[in-house]
Length: 140
Image (cartoon, rainbow, N blue to C red; front, side):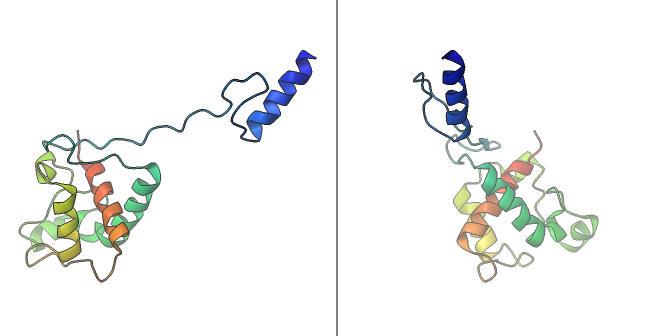
């Protein structure tokens, strides 16, 4: 009898049931989304992101931003020579005090004479995902 209950419980767990025959929770809670802390920003100005959004943001960043800002957020040597005020996303002070809204605005409409806007190339969701990813590049 005990063997039958254990087998039934294992089947219920494998099938994704919410409770076993014994009444215990069969599916553990999903892990919390990783929090991205604002470097020097006011608490609550940034939000937690999901693993999927961070992965999508990384892909978007690498397809659209890495040529100038580098694969991991530090501008390439060529970009440093070419652009006077290029952002280095690995430096805490680059993003300090910046809100999501400000960062999204810069990517959407461009910044200064050197950075073009991406509003015609990327959707609002893609820009948001890239911005969320950029915030993960800050070195602690």
